[in-house]
Image (cartoon, rainbow, N blue to C red; front, top):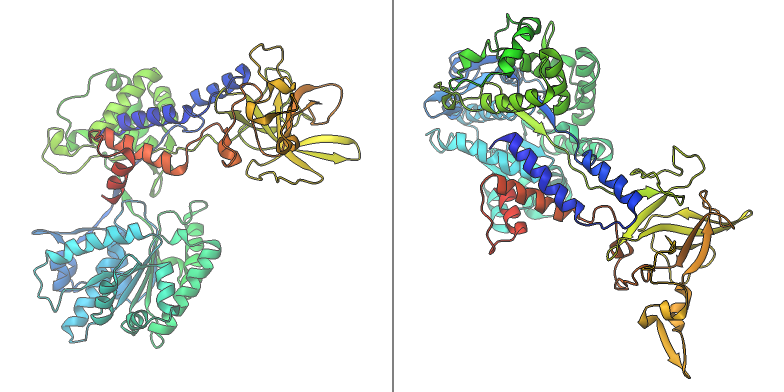
Length: 631
């Protein structure tokens, strides 16, 4: 899949979807909001990051030969006949575990952090089995989400199943997350697995719930050798305190006589300060979570290397960028050729790595900022730079054999991080047009101090604006203050009155409501003795004409509005009446009306369409989205 084409299609689909919910009648508000959509306020520019090359460590066979791993472990961690090639940080983790030390791995996404604990855990298990020890649960691995446990049990099972080891040596991995049937739980209790994957909530239940099966599962973990917390950065605040207590309970129940090796992994625990400062911050957090001392020497960070020729610097390639950007990309683009390709060197050093005393990955950069930088360094226009750079990145992220070479890997893979949010709420003032539109709640318009801002919503039928307010009385008289629409008005309000302000006709001949009895919706009226009048149950919600100054004060000058007390009954412009049983938020449209579920369905459906999944009328988007998420 081509990442840039996918990103463009995804954003276009979501933009059309999101903008379809609101009809806005007022031209000044409509224009201001459209400008924000066009500036991509709610789906800002994608962030670009390059996947770095990790410094190589020994292969699994080398560690077997040196005695750092058992021969049986070497048979597990390989791809067919090819031994697994470790990164340096993975080898460092294996060495820490062999020394019986706890540690934390803080390498980036996609760096193989799971191997940093699975390899030493599996090695300890096969060694114990060869020593004649009975099978027990030696390691409990705690994940923040079931999806991670589901993914990783498949990966480790692939390695174990292809090893051809006898059954008595093969480590058994099981999942106990609350997704399992009673029969599966019974099997886990009766036949203890060597490695138990769980989540922190289920681990807590295993320790505290008075259930015979749970008790047996914990008893099977007596003498626990490893406690692993994956995605350590997710455990913060109150949840972090809960997990810290959980780890102490596990240690007290399962390893009272010998401290287990504690292992944490995280890609994003500390990103500011010096290397020493970041390592200390990580070590301090890990020590508090695990309840054991973890020093800075036990924080394992990533070790990187250049993919391009490390003799070349940015200054060497900048003069060559103009010619490269204005020329077509060659059909054959092997890894060897790319090592000295000017645009590859520029991308790695300008976008991917800080080439200082020690190589460090750079923070993701907005794609448009990358294009501006490329344009500045090359002297080529942004349009040409954008097209050429998108095409180039897409090409070099392909396996080498698709670029005219023989290898299976990408030269420089990249990620586009696209953040999408709902448009949320609109805030504006009760002043003359054109008005400012804001999207974050605050008391006053910052460009016009004293002009009060109100949450603004729109009639779903005609788009007439409606401001969410509360009418209050104070020493200076009546004023209208903003209100959250989810603070629903009560039917028997006393004192302050929640309701809505909506502009009057301003001479518009299509404006339906005048305040006269005949301009009310039909079911608000009744005839008694030949006289038409309002129904008694409607009288508390009769719109009242008021004049509101920009500061929200009721007075003789200002904006002419209808104040609708209580729950929203009907739109004065078109007389549309939402169903009275609807939530107030649902009666009136916000800037975007999609819920999180609908937005997720739309995004996944667009992703499936980009991946080539055909539309099938028998399977609506939501069903196809579920299929994708399960896969």
